[in-house]
Amino acid sequence: MSAEKAVGIVLVSHSGQLAEAVADMARALAGGGATAPVATAGGTPDGGFGTSAELIAAAAHTVDRGAGVAVLADLGSAVLTVKALLAEGGELPDGTRLVDAPFVEGTVAAVVTASAGADIDAVEAAAREAYDYRKL
View 1: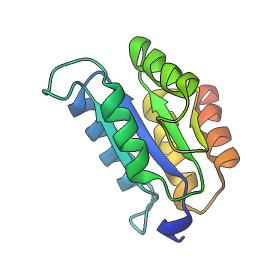
View 2: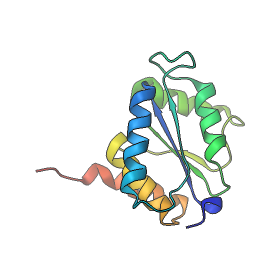
View 3: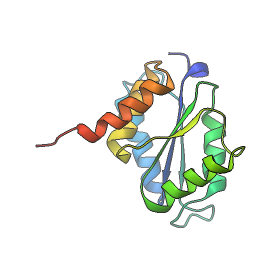
C-alpha cells in the first residue's frame, strides 16, 4: 500500500481522548504494516468536549492524498458539523465524504480497508457494513 495514494480517514468525536484511542486501535488492527493516513478531530481547540469545524478541516487536509477522505463521526453535533462543512463547500478537500457507520467498528473497517489500498467507495462500504456485525 502506498500512503501517498491511500484514502485518508478522519475521526470526529466530542472527546479528543476517544478519537485518539479509536485511531490507535484501528491502526493496531490494520496489521502492523503501513496504514492509511488517519487524523483525529476530537473535542474543542482548548481541549474541552465538543466539536470544532476548524479541527475537522485541518484533520481532513492532513490526511488528504488525493484519493478521498472518509470522515467518521461519533454522534450529534459532530455529524452536524461535518455536514455543515460539506454543505458550505471549500472547507474540506475534494472527495471528502461523511460515512454513516458505527464509530469504533466502522473506523476499524475503514482503516483496514484503506490500508489495503482500496478506493473511497470500498472504504465507505466496509465502514457501513460494520452496522451488520452481530455480537450475539
